[in-house]
Image (cartoon, rainbow, N blue to C red; front, side, top):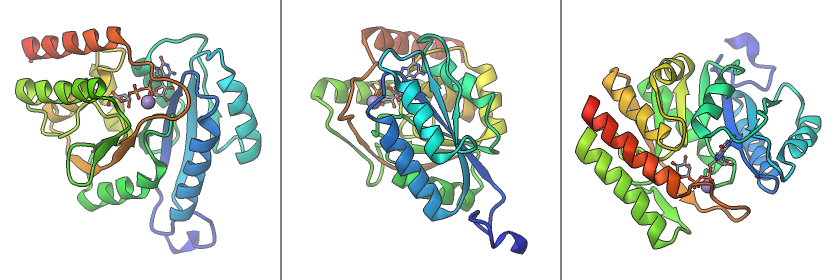
Length: 250
Ligand code: GDD
Ligand code: MN
């Protein structure tokens, strides 16, 4: 691809990365995460777009998105909002419909997932030609910072139970910082039944069942500074239900 050298696009790559950013009340976080994404994609030279899926946030997240669109351009920041809070899983399904990249990044908008890891995901994917690269808090230099004991136990517990019951072949099944080949994610989404947080676990288990290759990149997950987590008791119950349903049906 020698003729692409003059553009800012990485000369080695014709790939395009669509980042799906679901938001619910992330007014303070959105400008920072977008700025960091632009910075790290810019430095590495890969082609990208950021798709913000806001679920009618009452705090004005969408209006912030509109400002960012003016700064970075409508080709870089795509706003694909929905009228109300319809859940994380369906937000991704909605977002991917508008993606023009051949690869999809999924990450949180609250800075718990740092864009500095993006180049490592891309490198890892290329290294093993993986269908999916999953960020892991539970291997290598990965870790969790800022969570209380309760939250740590929930995450560890969910991962442990999944390992025992489903043998997913991935060390972090509940994390959501991942890179997928677009067609792989589409195929996985068609098969997924869950709507909420359990979606992350379901998708990686199904990936294994379908024989897709999974690479892992250790990441540090840092608890949010602004706003609050939307993970409530309901989500924990539905995770447990989802896990047991899988165990019973697969
Ligand atoms: N559009 C939309 N709709 N976005 C949502 C919704 C929703 O219903 N619920 C949450 N989000 C967005 C948040 O605004 C944030 O950008 C991201 O999804 C993650 O939500 P958080 O509320 O910050 O999640 P968390 O920090 O408690 O949970 C994280 O860790 C879990 C366990 O490790 C997430 O990464 C989860 O996906 C993960 O399972
Ligand atoms: Mn969070």
